[in-house]
Length: 523
Ligand code: HEM
Image 1 (cartoon, rainbow, N blue to C red):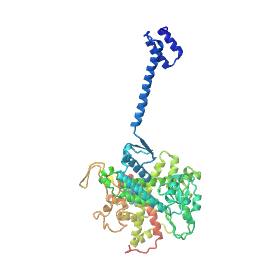
Image 2: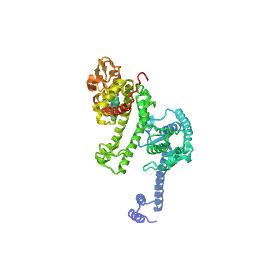
Image 3: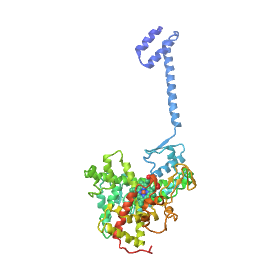
Image 4: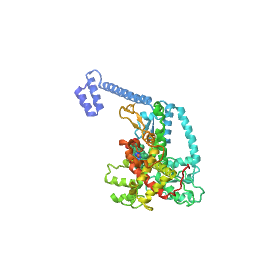
């Protein structure tokens, strides 16, 4: 066999195949060509064998690495749960489940995919303490679902706003023929539902437990529409069913926010999962926000439908021309200044008015009326003032400031029964000394308005109801810090003048209507 020179071999290889592998083979063969004693075919075979062995080795190592990597890899399970902060049943089931899986299969990685601001630490802290507790929770849920199903199965009508809700109602309540689906988004069609309402038939004592699913923050509009329709078709002489909803939230909020939180005294309890009233408060706040959001949506929808804008739109209340609601006013301000009056701001303002203004004003009216009824001479004097300054059959808001005695009555009521007896908790911003007591920075401070208003050192006969004392003392302003039913300083109640007007208006109406009968000595 003739020996070929390196140059010849190179040319032959290059002519045969221009690929990279061929090029590499050609290079090796070129080097082997320096051993002219070895025949070219043997050199070629040896080279091919060597390179293919090397290639197989590389491939084998790669496959082995992938297989061993897969073997060593931990299995992961993902949970898709959009909101983990809701604190509702769904979230609790999720935590129980995650915890139970971690206990049973420690090698399993659990990943929770959520869109809220939860961190891995906060998520981990929310799980139940142990597998035992998880099981207890599951038992609790089993019993709860059974009870929930038994109560639900008695419903005359159930309505669901999603297929998910419908299927869970079907599964637990087992009344598919009585379960109706309504659309979640406007325009909602509740007509089929309204035709179905069994309350149209004479029922002796209609009781509406709920016409929505048991989480009240959801789907208020259809619920309220259905309720309004139900009430509308009842006979006049039937007892009126009540849907106590917002009022319930306000009341519950004031009870829960006033309750002591054990975790404030034993912070370690937080680490053990104890959050006391915080979760309840968060839930109440979300419920309230959802309801106010719904009010805003409805007002906006009405305004758009009536085609009003700007100033004119203010005059559109609940269909009442000339009577704008606070939300109407705010929505019209939003049109002119959207940056300031965002939906969140409007919601916050409405929530403040409702939460801070309802109970305080209502309780003061109630007490003022009670005091008037057990002090007929004061009621008589109040009526004489009204007759002299306003007369019967007329009452305008502007008249309130011109009724000094009426304002004395309200002030004296607030003195004896301040609606917020300990004001709101404040915190000292620096070390200070008050009345000889050292108050360190960061101390929670409660001002006892009740005790201040009844201090015998500063008030004459403090336990007695004497509205005229404010006349002698030059009104509430002159009483200074002896009289602080609305607090003092820059965190003073901003609703004071509104409250005085609203309470005044209500009292004037009640005094006008009262028969003048004395309730003295009766409880
Ligand atoms: C008789 C009726 C009312 C009474 C006795 C009352 C009393 C109070 C008191 C004692 C405070 C705490 C002040 C402080 O921290 O020193 C307060 C705060 C507040 N009140 Fe009133 N209030 C009444 C009506 C209203 C009304 C009708 C509104 C709203 C329309 C309202 C809105 C507020 C708000 C928003 C705060 C919080 C102020 C802040 O923290 O800066 N209040 N109120």
